[in-house]
Image 1: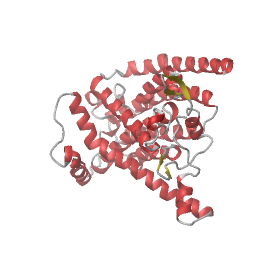
Image 2: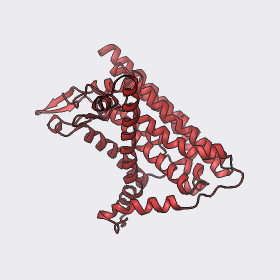
Image 3: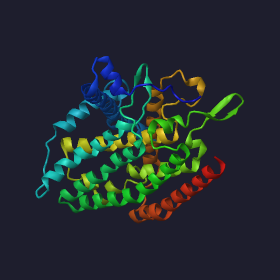
Image 4: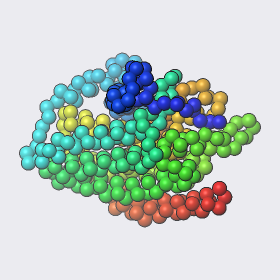
Length: 362
């Protein structure tokens, strides 16, 4: 068996038990503390990824020297960067629609953090980092992630700036064009697993697919259906707006798109939201295609599942940064054509083929 050990209780239940609480009060207190803990873990990872890791990775790809003066390997640059950005004046342009303009930077990171409510992140000692496990978990995480589109159009429309409006419209067009193939490709995994429940999708990947010379290859859906994995990866990159699909904020064309008019703490919130969405995209890929918190081989199962899950999320983040440095941006017409004429057709073809294979062979 390749799967990480399953915990009997979810994180809120464990917290309520430790505090000696039960009933509705225990559920509320345990849920709030658990959500606070997981949110802060993701915010800490984002703080490392944005101001520091992104710079170091890009510098490595382009043969330059990144931040290296403050702290070991320059990692403490996070602190002055945070102070610098948060202490800047918040400039509110004339003519903006204040309610939408103020809410957009909050909605974007919130939509990504909500997605982690149903993500099984594995165990670390006795702690199971899984807040909720509803039967429609996969549908719920996509629903939360799609709220980001609302934030982007709110920001673009309310900024009273033609470049911002264009960025918001591009974001909606891109998300619609790629969210459908993303979900359709995920449905092919649902056909294999027979459930939308996140923990059950992970458990369905727990057996060995094949054993060669004593080494077992896990039955992760990335190995079972590599074509679906590649489709999902491409659509995921478009959903999070990473190269070559960073059309909504293309600096060379529309300055910064939907976030052109934002500064200070609002800019930080947009920046934060982008990186949390990258980690959410990596978390969904880990659950759906990479065995969740399971180790790649049984010999490494001694490493806690939570550590493996974090490694998989960071591996996806590294891939996005490689794409940012290596792949040129596509034009908006090319992006739409790839989505509607390519990805949509291929995702439906993969879904039908998967249904036939499962129906006939399994």
